[in-house]
Structures are given as structure tokens and as C-alpha cells.
Length: 391
Ligand code: HCA
Ligand code: CU
Image: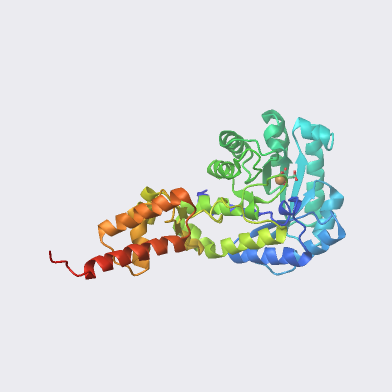
């Protein structure tokens, strides 16, 4: 499957609700659901309707909002939870159960054979009640699970053909891309079932892991806006979008309303009570700022020199910083041009030196740079118009 065809299953409304600072109101959840679908996401996961009364009402409201997206409820692999979820009108159930030895012991305490029996049992129950619902079974903590245990879960379930898709979760966010590649590849080949990857970001690999998963056959990737989730979260939506865009700009531009992404991220940050991190992929404040003289010169000539992503496609602008000791005369010239000052090369170089000298002593604002340029321009005019002194 080409990278750009991957199905984004956004879980801002489930994993994102597990973010320590998030306490979304019902209205906020609907607003986020609308914004995600307007951006172009076609698959949303919501918190288990069995979690609380409001979770149930919120799931029903989102499922009934007529959004152009599949709404999936994330549920424990349990008949009661599945039944409550089905009653909300969701079109998909995402079941999850721990498979690693450490998490099985610390959570449900069941052996692998028992996990399979329960997963099969619950799936049969759901299939009887709602034959057309999309059913996914996922292993929590799959990457700390021995491969033979993992296969002993998925191979029998694949044979039963009750599940439409298998999920595989890097719950503690410590997997690296090579391992994700290996596990996804194996699962894909042995089960012949679509694969969904869910990756946390504890060691900072969540975006690279999502890429490795898709490159090795995963069809669905979980994201959340700004990556919000348990601890430091999961693959950020905007991070995956950046990966897709870098691989296939035209396809990504056609598929998503890219200029809505920065606003979506700011709004979710606001609703979650945080700010967008300054260095967030694509949407961070410094994502398109250039500083050193060699960078700014080349960017003026051709922005692609130092930009993998074109900010204009995302409704963003680049910032070319001028007032600092690393500046160069090309950047100073561009600023002079913007101010309508036509300076000779020697004057530009003089202005550049003054900017550097001043910046060595204190922080410079753009106004300070403009003042230096005006001063140098005045001095040049004074030189030209000064009467020639006759000896
Ligand atoms: C969690 C569950 C989960 C589930 C992922 C999935 C995880 O620990 O809260 O459904 O695939 O990270 O394992 O988010
Ligand atoms: Cu998770």
C-alpha cells in the first residue's frame, strides 16, 4: 500500500482524553470531531461508552452527528462493554487486551489461550448482534510480548475470520523502527489481515515507528492531534501528515485540507489546556524559522534549500531572522529592500557589521535592525549630497 493511502485512525477523542491535562466537555468533543473530519480524517476513535454516563452520551452524539467518518468505540474485550458501545450507534468496535507477560500479570491475569478464547467469544457475540460492525482486536503491549505468544493470539483469531483488522500497540513507547518493521511484517504475512499500529512516544520514535509500520504493510495508523495521550502521548497527527507530505506532496494536498492543520492543533491545545510545543513537527512556532547567514541566503534564493515542507501549503509563513550575530549581508539586503532602501554593497556590509556588533552586546529586535539600516542609508545620502570641498 502506498504510504499516502494509509488510513488515519485519529484517537484524540480516546487516547487524547487520557492525556493528563485533557478534560474535554461534550461540546469540545463534538467540535474536535467536526474539525478532524473537516481536515480530512475519515476514522475517529472515541472513549469506551462503558467508561461513564457522559462517555456513553458523547459517543452517541458523535456517532449521530452525520460526520463523513467511521466512528469507532474503544472497548475492553468484554461482552457488556461491547453491548453498551453498540447501543450508541457506533459503526466500529476497537477491542483491546493485554498480551505481554508483564501486563497480563498486572492487569487481567489471563494466559494466552484464555485471551484467544475471550477474543473469539466476544467477537462471536458482537457478530450476532451487529453483523456489519467493523471489528478490530488489538494487543496492548504487543512489543514486549514474545513473538510466539503474539502469533499464538493472532493466528487462531485470523483463522476464525471474525475480526476485520488486527491492532498492534507499542504501549510503553520503547519500540524502535526496525522492530516495528519486523513485527508488522510478520503479522501481515502470517495473518493476511489488515494491520493497525498504535505507537507511544516514550523514546521519541512514534512518528518513525508509524512510518516503519506503514512501509511494512500496516494499513491503519493511530494518531492524536499534537500526539496527546497517556504520558507524552502517541504519533502526532501533524507528524504523520508531514511524513505523508514529504513522500507524496500532491496526494497529501489533494487528500487533506492542509491549511486547517495549524488551527486544529492550536484549538486542541487550547481545549486541553496546554500550548503547542515550540518545536512540534510542522506546527511548532519555530518550524519554519531560519537564522544563520548561510541558511538565510540560500532560503532567499530558493526556500527548498533548507525546507523539506512548504509552509504555504499549510497556511503558514517562514520567518527569516536578521537581527543577530550570525546574520549575513544577504539577509540584511532583503530587509533593506523590504523597507524600500536601496543601499550599495559597501553600505549593506557596513549595516551588517553594525548589526553583528550590536547583537554581540544585546538582543536585537527587528526595529533595531531597521534603525541601523535607516542610519546607514542617511549617512550614504549625506555623503552623496555633501558639497565637494575645494582645497
Ligand atoms: C492503553 C491502551 C492503548 C490501546 C491501543 C490499541 C495502548 O494503554 O491505554 O487499542 O491498540 O497504548 O496500548 O492505548
Ligand atoms: Cu495508547
